[in-house]
Length: 144
Image 1 (cartoon, rainbow, N blue to C red):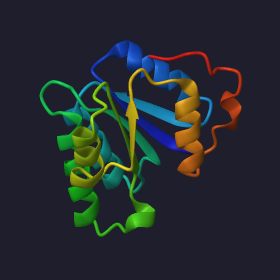
Image 2: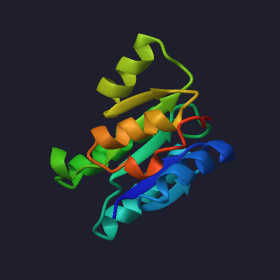
Image 3: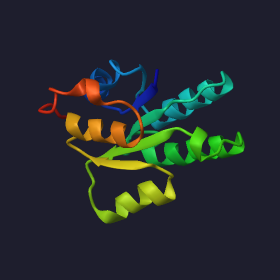
Image 4: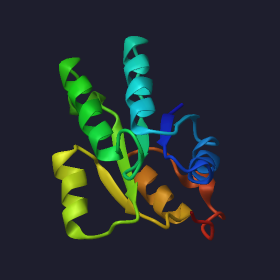
């Protein structure tokens, strides 16, 4: 069963993604980049990892891109190879190419989604990451 981490300072965005992901697996939530880093560190200490992390970029304290970089550093320090690391999906209202490139190449994110996020986009991401999204059929009209 997949394990997910949803990171967003908006409680409604967290609940939206949790509603999509919970039928597919376990879903933890964090309200900041710092909470995300701590959640990933605890998981690694306990010998498991999140299959996918859905991370908002613009958050107080520690932003999503900084959290992504820190998570990738922790995974590298633990000696995890590409097959063993969490897949990170960053989410932002910013759609310019500079932010996309920074997210994917500088911070180590795997996927970049632009808000508003629709259920269909999450389904596609899950399928592309090798995680099942088929149970979500019929929810395509919703978004945050």
